Amino acid sequence: MRPLNRDATLLVVDMQMGFDDPAWGVRNNPAAEARVAALLAAWRAAGAPVIHVHHDSPSPAGRLRPGTPGNAPKPQARPLAGERLYRKRVNSAFIGTTLEADLRAAGAPALVIVGLTTNHCISTTARMAANLGFETIVVADATATFARANLDGRIRPADEVHNAALSDLKDEFAQVVDTRAVLTALGVHEAAND
Image (cartoon, rainbow, N blue to C red; front, side, top):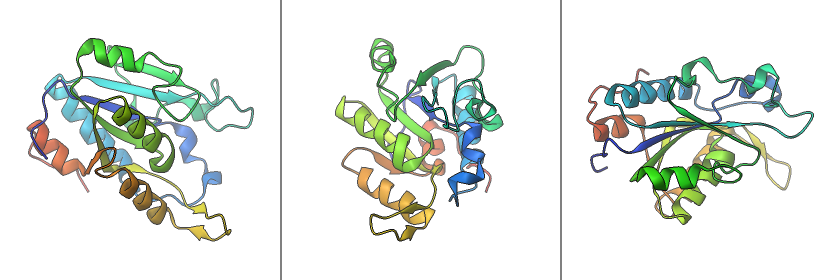
């Protein structure tokens, strides 16, 4: 991975408490929150731009509904004063928000995407970012997802769902890298804690 300009934007997607609800089922990558926290710390220390995106579930049964504990940010990814927060109601961070216009106005050279869940909002946001012409980087070990049923009813393990989603993004829509590579590219040489 080439060095990252300090204008590269860290896009933290849907790091919200509602994803801790056991009703989602088995999740992979329990270290994702620690990786996101390490990347946030590095971006903040570098004075590089950080943007948060939170999902406001429109469904009355949604686990990320506004006004519920599930809508709150996870403690590892709470926005700080001065960090932009966009609220969305669909999978893409670009739909129904001013994210694209704001990134263009800021001259953002690259988006580094982390958060939840790999096969939904991470994938949709990354695909749209690439289609809009942004350099797009997805941090594999700073994302996670849940087990999911195939069309035939067989349950695919969360790692399989995660890896398939990342494989579909790789090279076509995004660079898919790990936290260590991103920290090195940003000029931070210590990796996230395991």
